Image (cartoon, rainbow, N blue to C red; front, side, top):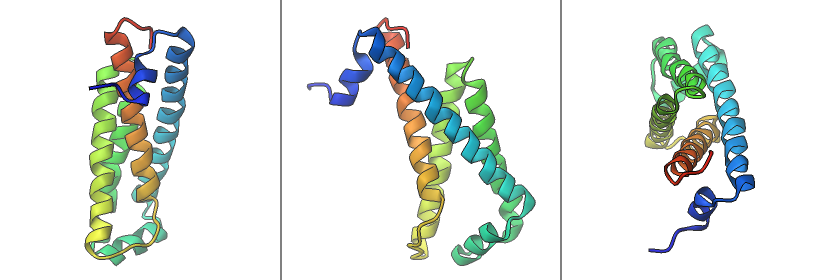
Length: 144
């Protein structure tokens, strides 16, 4: 099976491309960290707008602090992952699962309004994908 364009870029031996993936990962991971900490903070302080969205989908407001914990843990995992790459992969994977569940929760009750769960899921998927590119570069002997 022929490699996709993304795989070709991830596996390329060109040092500029290897550096580009590292820069892209660092930027996207930093954005994911910032947004997850923001979202967790909103949960921890009981931000009203989040509470209204939770009411709409039938999730009790008492769960807000508990839903902030995996977001904060994912952010911390991504920070630690700059030094321990396996932790970053696990944290990004956990965030993908968390935000995918959030999307399913909204769709389950036919709430089709645009909420932050969609961009958060996109960031988590992007972080996990770029993390995978960096791992593949290292396996192939690159410097990602």
